[in-house]
Image (tube, rainbow, N blue to C red; front, side, top):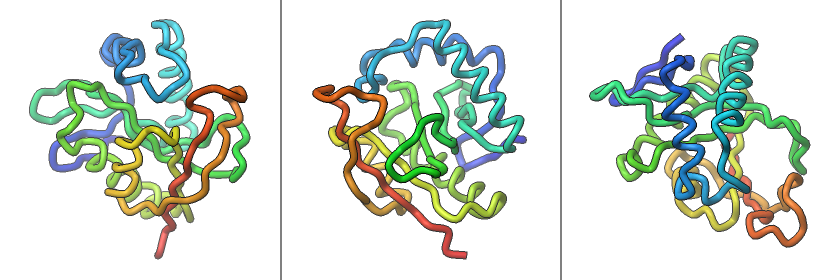
Length: 176
């Protein structure tokens, strides 16, 4: 299944996405609000997990392609976190785009589509997003797509004293 916005395609992953996705995950600028960059093997394993979840659920972190160039630019979509959060169970919306494509409005454009799919096609009641407290760019995207700032929390996978441990959650409810 493919979903289209004005400038983007959200789709299942292709073999040709693996190399640019690995480069994105190894880019310190892209990964600055994550605990570490990923190896090629870790990146490929992540894609396998994502593909499996899309196959099982009909939704997930879709690969995002720029219509005008056909370039793979990252992922945007929906996910059930694989670990317990203070507000579990939840469905999250997330994104990770190559920095060459930042500043073009692609993250909110694709995220709006993901919310639409989650609410209209899959009747999800609420979708959350969360990020490190310092990740102001992602928080701006959350606000642009209509999410409301919620509570702060300590990320359960990050140790006491880790600079990214403190997180913030944003929420949006299905009003239909």
